[in-house]
Image (cartoon, rainbow, N blue to C red; front, side, top):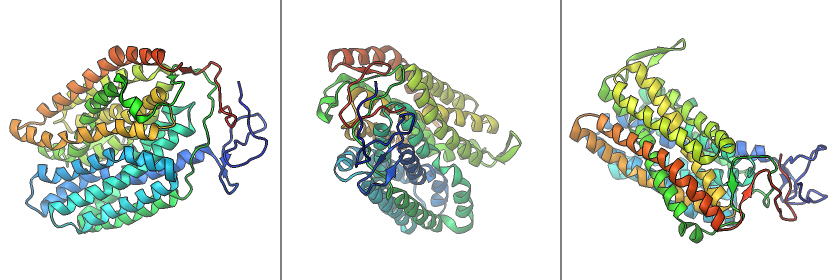
Length: 459
């Protein structure tokens, strides 16, 4: 089942070990390139880029102390960031194909750093809105490129590779939460924005320099429960399928709950009066809010490769059903028991464990369903669901202020999670089977596959 491969390590060829396994490729200068090395670089870029989103909840209370703005007004900056980050990804996909990953991520690193710097000098709401827009462009470029590379380098381990890459974004702030929190207290939010912005920008640009475009497609030999499209769809073709719009609807519903908690967790803890309550768990004692934030980032990062790996083995739709149900139950329990500091920490971790996987599952489904040639643009269009969901974040503040409780917000989020769980198993699963049956003949791991002349079997 192995495909032909070149005898020499010309650009785009696939060096093989003595056992015949795939070891990587070489670039135009004859430098060896490992796909695992490329995955590591993508993850590192995501870790650095993630701070502008996942550390925002730490900055909000400090910013509000210095100004008289309402929460909803300031959180509009978060909404703008997410909208720009997500809605720019289809355009980013176009430039990835034309310019390659290195140039796009270099641009993303510069713009991400600039977003932090703008926030450092902002003295008005429009200033923070401008920082959000600039930072959103940068993070969008980094995110789209890293996921695109992972999906193309790993056709045989697509869920795991996308999960590890998205996991870098979800858990990137684990190592920076405490330093950022400490610097906010000692130096204020302006110095914190400036210092970490420079560090993050340099880190992204350094990793970007070594990124390479994957070579032409490869056959995947191992057995799997995943069916893949036998041809590559264009963006227009994908948008004309009912599968795309169902995925967009489900993505929007599920991502809303996690995004709401991401942006509002600090405010929820403050309103419940438990932000500074000491929680002791597994021999660790810490205030409830930073404890929850640290655990959440760990769970958010772990969930993406974990559920991605599961989906490679039991199928995407079954995995979606399990994860979305778990998230819905976790959000419900957070509404019931969140006033208890220990329960708040553990349940918020459960919510993030079940929420983070959306970024590995939906990207993998997009590649499975529509092929990888245009997946940067197609998943970019699907990823716009995160931008749509972000529009509900300020509405969450409005609903909370109208009802006087976060329970109304959390219960609404749980309902969307549970509806998406049911849709994954009972609507998406049969729809995908019809999609593959009615269009190009699908590829199923474990069966013989045709590969281009420069392809190779990956193990």
